[in-house]
Length: 291
Image: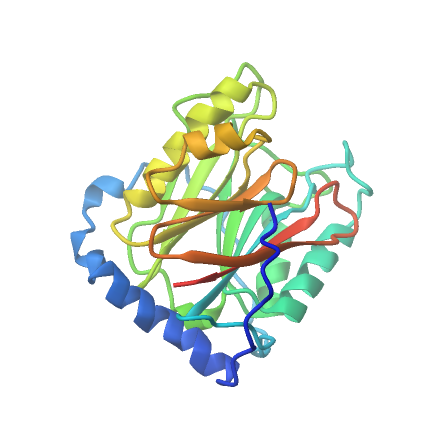
């Protein structure tokens, strides 16, 4: 689903200034919708093991990017396949290190992560300087655990510090629709001053359940009261299935398989590309948008 249009000339504005422009431009588009937030978007939180950076790493400059007609926003979707070795290229931290390298090299504003361990997120946050939110998947009422003492297994959102700290109720909950497998899939939405970033890994076993979960995920994103972007391993390959869960005028880009980035009406896709991720069965999906 990569956009083959010729990229626009790269911006000459310093990366930090352009990244700060994201917040200003999107706040204007959203009409300061953050005041519409209510407590109804918050959900009972299952008390996940929340990683926190031991100490912030130095800020790393993002590469120059095209900025046609608006503030740029880059979203990187990663499935690190790191619960154990099942279906993955290895059982070590190769995928985590490869993900860190991609973040350092490409400097995305938002990173959405699936099949990742809590301790991996601590490492990635520390080594990139990005802020982190993590939500564990569940088996019954207990978090799914990673092997080798790497903590809970689940999904996460990393954001560049120039987007600011989360400023509202983080939405973290199990989907109402679940397949017959033992894992209870969860969604995570993190609100920031100018946008919300959401992620989930949807059911790999039942496409009908995955479609219902996709609609629920997008509903949670729109329910935060501000513009939203969603990245995730949706386990949906059919174009009709993905578009079927999108509100009117939302758009998306995909990796040609199951990973997608979905964007609210305030965003326009410029291009997308697949990035190699060593140690994972999935590529990284980098989507470049303007807001």
